[in-house]
Length: 375
Ligand SMILES: [Zn+2]
Ligand SMILES: [Zn+2]
Image (cartoon, rainbow, N blue to C red; front, side):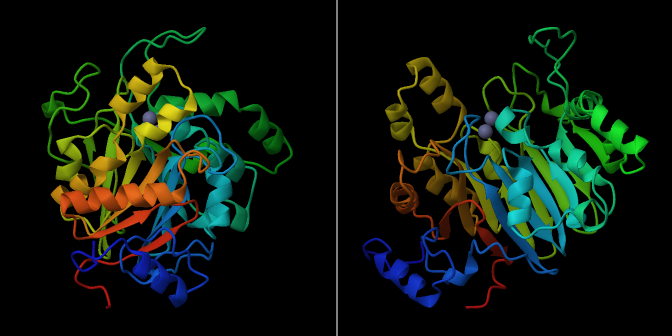
C-alpha cells in the first residue's frame, strides 16, 4: 500500500480520490493512485497503449442480477483480447465502448460454464452482422485442449471436448441460423470468423488430469505484433487443463489468474508484472449462503481466499493487484466495503507495497509500465 506506515485505513485517500474526480469510480481504489486511473464510465479505450477492462466480475455459474459473469478485456494498440466469456460478455463488451471490429482474440482460462457461456455468442452474432457490427478479420481463439477424460453427459461418447472441438460442435449445434442467413445472402459461416487453437501443456511438465498443475515454468502460447502470451497450469479441482495467462506488451504486462487455488505457478508467471488480475473468494461470505458443506469445502479448496491476495501480490512483486471473480458475488452478502477491508488487511499483513484494486463490472484500468508512470 502506498499510505504512510501507521496511517489508519485509506479513508483519507478515498476522500481525496472522490474529490479529485466525481466521475471516476473512486470506490474500487484502495491505494493512493489518482481516481482517474480507474473508471467505469464506459468510454472506449484509446487506440494506443494498454488497458484492462473488467467486463464481468461474478464468480461461479449461478446468474446474478447485480454482477455479470466473469470476463475481462485487454486492449493493446487499439485491438482487444477478451479473457474468458462469462454471462453477458458480449453485452458488457459493447457497454464498455469496445467495438466488434476491434476484437482480435479470445483466451479461455478453462472450460467451466461461468467462463465460456458467452464465448460462441461472439462469432454467432458477428456472423449475422456486417460492417461495424461484425468482425473485421477472423479472430484468434486460444483455450484448453481436451482433458482426455470420458464425457459423462447424456448421449456423449469419447473424451470431453477441448476448445477446438467445443467450437466445432457449437458451430454444428447452431447451424440453422447461419444456414438460413446464407440462404438469404445475408450471413456467413461463424467458423470462418475464428482461428481456434487448443492450448496444451508442454509434455515436459508431466501434467495430467490426475496431476493437473505440477510446478512449472511458464510456456509460450502465442506471439504477435501486440504481445507475447505465456501460461502456466493452475490447480482448480477436477479441471484440466486450467491456465493462467500472462500478456507482455510494449506498454506493460498483465496477468490473469483464471480460477485457481493458491499455487507457486502463479507467483512464477506474475513475477514483476505491472498488473495481476486475480480471483477472490471470501469463505465466511460463502458460509452464509446456506450451501451444503460439501460444496463449500469444494469451492474453498479450488479457489483462492481473498486473505491470500496480499501475499501473492507481494511474493510475485506485481505493481497492482486487481481482485475479480468474486465468490460470493452478491453485494448484499459481501458488500464492497467488506471486500475493500479484506484486501487492505491482506496487503498490510503481507507488507505489499503496491496497489490493490477492488474490481467492478466495467472498471477500466489503464496500464503503464512500472517506473514510467507519471506522478
Ligand atoms: Zn469461475
Ligand atoms: Zn472454474
